[in-house]
Every structure is written in C-alpha cells, then in structure tokens.
Image: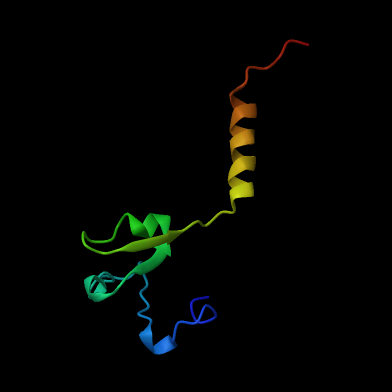
Length: 76
C-alpha cells in the first residue's frame, strides 16, 4: 500500500509485532503505520498512524447488532 502511495521501498522499515523486540529502532522513524492494537503497544515517542481493520460501514452494522441483542424480547 505504501509503495503504491509513492513511498520508496528502501525507506520502509517492516516489523512483525508477533516477534520479540519488534519495537527496536522504531523511535528513529518518522512515523509507524500500524493497526490500532499495535499502536497501543508502541513505545513513548513513536508517532503512530493507525488504520482501522474494519470499514466504517461494518462498525455501524456491528453497533446495530449490539442494539438488537440488548433490547428485551417483545411479548408475543
């Protein structure tokens, strides 16, 4: 995605947050593009640019399901 947006591949630093010490060296980057869960695990001083894993329309649909489940069953 970032390459398609014009970032040169040599300027990107890739990390796997499942591996030990994945945060090493990230303070020297201009920013970290990551999901919202990983953003919470970044060290202080790291500039996070989080992206959503779900589309806004999916989040709205999930909220509607929550409202539906929370409503008491209506009498028949």
